[in-house]
Amino acid sequence: MSVDTTPTSLPQWVAPSRVADHLGVSEKTVRRLIASGDLEARRMGKRLIRVSRDSLLALGQPVGGGSW
Image (cartoon, rainbow, N blue to C red):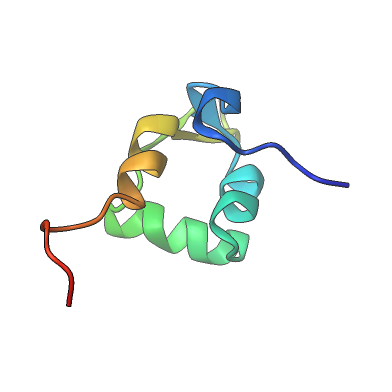
């Protein structure tokens, strides 16, 4: 089964499991990115955590403008 993770298909707040699928990493890595501040996340209720789509998309943006 293929999951559509194009920017327009992602909701404003994304589940960590979906973020992990999008990035090709484990959920533990997603939690580390949240803890380090590399991903913006909000707690929605006592246990539910969601990651900001904008911070997820910004994570993949190139730094600088040149090539190696």
